[in-house]
Length: 117
Image (cartoon, rainbow, N blue to C red; front, side):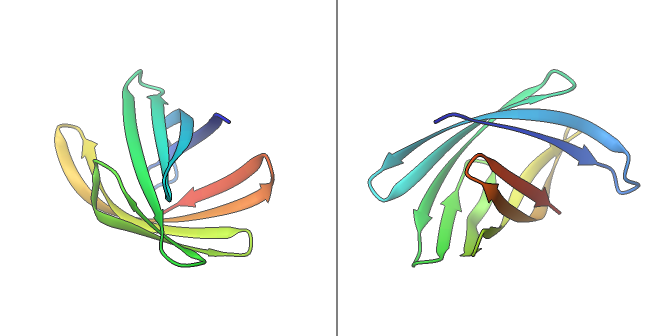
């Protein structure tokens, strides 16, 4: 089932710097889950990130993607998933390694809230 997501990037001041929407397709390959994310940003730019997620025990996941440095790690507890990784983030012609700490909360079978810092 395709997934649609929306988000914003905020400056440190809290000002919205950029809005985005994402179309996500998923499929299984053996034990792996593949997430194909297609981003469209408010400035018209597009980006694709393909995650390969692998279970790492009953409540843990590992993940890799082309712009992720090393491996992402996640842990599930109840309706929450904490997902941590380092992302190569292009900004104005430079690329920065940014540590991300995502908290995802499954609100119901159709709604997930994600907060990244």
